[in-house]
Image (cartoon, rainbow, N blue to C red; front, side, top):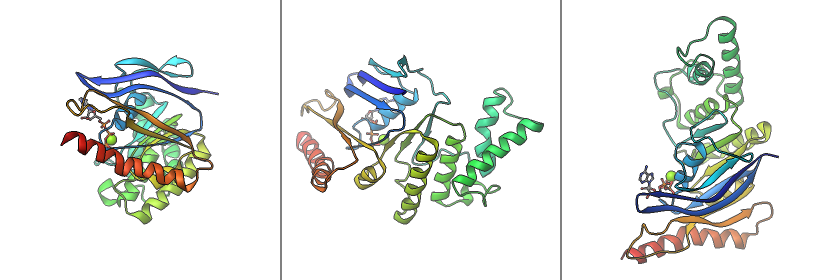
Length: 265
Ligand SMILES: Nc1ncnc2c1ncn2[C@@H]1O[C@H](COP(=O)(O)OP(=O)(O)OP(=O)(O)O)[C@@H](O)[C@H]1O
Ligand SMILES: [Mg+2]
């Protein structure tokens, strides 16, 4: 079984320690949801997994080999907003990755290769429920549809690891519920490993098979940037009781901001 391993990973920007001494091992097919106070380094963690940032110390391994530190097709990402190209139609947005993969210089495919890419893109758009909107432009789509498009655009490249950075944070609650169903369905169908950051604890518990809480173990009131966050809870989500959920909710939503505020004032 393939694995992602973080071995004593640190991330610093100059003297600012963002993440400290992170160790973690994740198996294929796990759905890790990530919560933590704003600014504690969750996106930084995801960007290291993506290969956009490299650890200052320590190592990240994929299947026992050091992670290639550049974004590759084995890892796909969806952000809260703006991951689609506004000047391309829905279908063109999803075909683009396939075209660039097959023809890196021109980004153009012809004949049978083009038809194959178009078929794959249509299939993917079908599975996210956008088969009626192939020729529309992103500005002509609702927020939920745009995120469906972003998911299709990412998943058509057949990543093994899907990285989601608050992908539903900007959506209305009803639409969010639809997106939850869709993501669970795609996760089960495709057998992906998922890392998803969310500010919504209930979303984290509902979607994840494992919860990672990022938090600082130490705070220096004189130097807020001296210590970084690490993983303070790592919890399988099969049979979590309500008391534990409530404890973590209080910790993330109340105690952490209070501690930071007290330290700053
Ligand atoms: N390229 C960079 N250079 C310098 N500092 C950075 C860089 N990227 C992130 N940081 C800093 O690292 C810290 C963590 O940022 P990050 O975006 O990972 O937090 P986050 O947990 O995702 O926050 P939020 O919940 O608000 O999205 C912040 O203090 C941020 O200013
Ligand atoms: Mg973030």
